[in-house]
Image 1 (cartoon, one colour):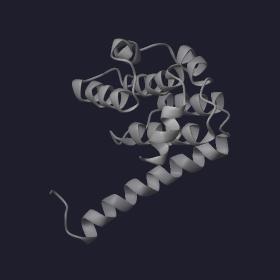
Image 2 (cartoon, rainbow, N blue to C red; image 1 turned 90 degrees about the vertical axis):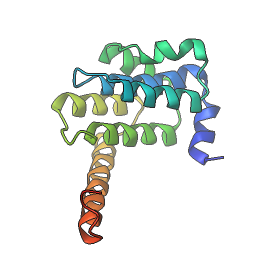
Image 3 (tube, one colour; image 1 turned 30 degrees about the vertical axis):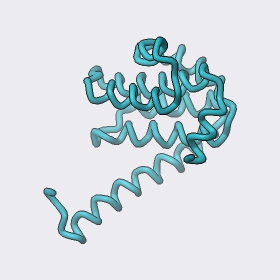
Length: 145
């Protein structure tokens, strides 16, 4: 089993739900929550063994403050850093990183005890990874495929 998934499944369901609610909140930050985003989060919920009757709860868009309060339950540093990484990837997926997304990610990280400089380091790593992937397309003449 994947070590990250194994660590995730060690957490109680409330913490796993809080993790996924942060995804939902960020996905809704642009004012749209399309079917692909919902399906992605539903599949994650199944992978993270969220009870079927609680999936709607995961998909409900709560306020930033409610999410911040919920993620405080996540006490695994590994999971906290992974959540910041995944939120950064999600935030950059549409090639537009808004101030609201940046602020939300920072607040989530701090609620879990992740330092701002570590959050910035993760964000920069995600950006570098995106740039390298784009460069690879050019180098290996894969643009447009």
